[in-house]
Image 1 (cartoon, helix red, strand yellow):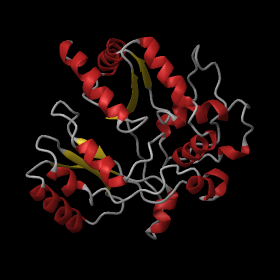
Image 2: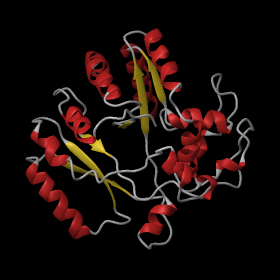
Image 3: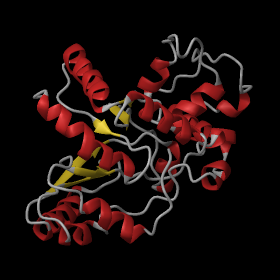
Length: 275
């Protein structure tokens, strides 16, 4: 996914200073091991910075807490690798330093590379529900923003991420060849993304590696809501009504842009609608 190149400490502190209306809690996702399914090696993962490298998210929390009062924090820690006592010790310390603003996003891990780094065997199934909003003051402005973002998306990075998420080495498939998931499913992978390849629409009449790469690079194959605050809020309401959602993860397309758009434009509209 796209991200802006900014000094790590400035980026974190700026995000921490988001106003009180910001999303609660602010979650830092962690990952162990790189995406080595594409071409069977880590080369393109490292070269394209496809979720690589990932710093330890626990380290900056105390600094972010020092410049905020109302923002809560959630960190992903996989119970596939984490030891109960060490998790309790680390999170209780962070909860103390943040005055009770700490939470734990509990997951299991799925990447074989992650299990290799810890000398463990078979990954366990994982699934997530996420969406990525691209918001403008009007639908036209949001669509123009999306087209601009697409210029900076890396096709190869999108393929690296998709291969890592699904266990399919998509480098073996021609960019414009229609893709099928038959015989490719690995139970330990994020199977929801594979299931999405069975669904087509007017916008996506067929799935090819090129289409997959474009989608993975912006939004990570999860739903991308593009439009004005009213348009995105209406789409969010539809998801809530049809799927009985209580909440979902927010995927960023650019930082801090995505978060600022949500705080400044989307949240006021959702509050107005009492969503």
